[in-house]
Length: 287
Image (cartoon, rainbow, N blue to C red; front, side, top):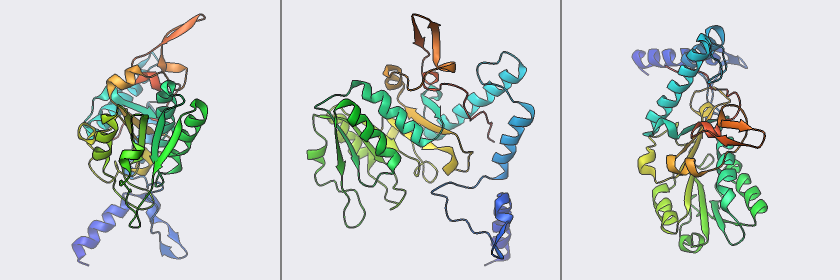
């Protein structure tokens, strides 16, 4: 290995303080990024800066610190939108990808009932299995799934039998967290849309590692999380087409998600704030 490359690797490792540790007398080697990634100094410094000089409740504190925290929060939303090729009002902040997928299942499920189908696959992370199981138990809809081939690919040989006029939702991983398989989301989304179904994508392993342009992906909702892409824990994203988000009921109640509250009933804010109940854990400005 050349001295230049060795120096570059040392500089890169230096951006991640935890890598200065030794384990059993050896420099730490971290190979668990698909589970959670390490945080570089830039992120740690941004988190620390917020707590040191800008602590305030986003969107609900009418003073200087509140204005600064809210501006940083919305700058983060715009940055995520730019990463996805999306509009900022299509970016919903959640606690993690699991909450984003539960939000999708809960809100989309308001229109499901007996005779409807939800289609997933056997290669899903359980965060993209259990919410749909719970939805089907609650509504009487039927859960169906793609199998995989011996090569670890999604078996599309019976796609026409799985995605039918009964199908209302198809929810699949973009990149498998176990197999590394990259699924043909656009092809499956086109089949779903042809029968009037919606396409949900678990992109927790995709967004950190490959370009994801939601204008081309074909999905209606896309979930991912910050802690798998060098960000803090406690922050996730649900991207959705604005017209779809505007048609969906809230997932959680309270805080900034309301428009007007009366004892006789409440009305709800427009997306994305409709889906951001309570104080979030994402008031960080990233460089």
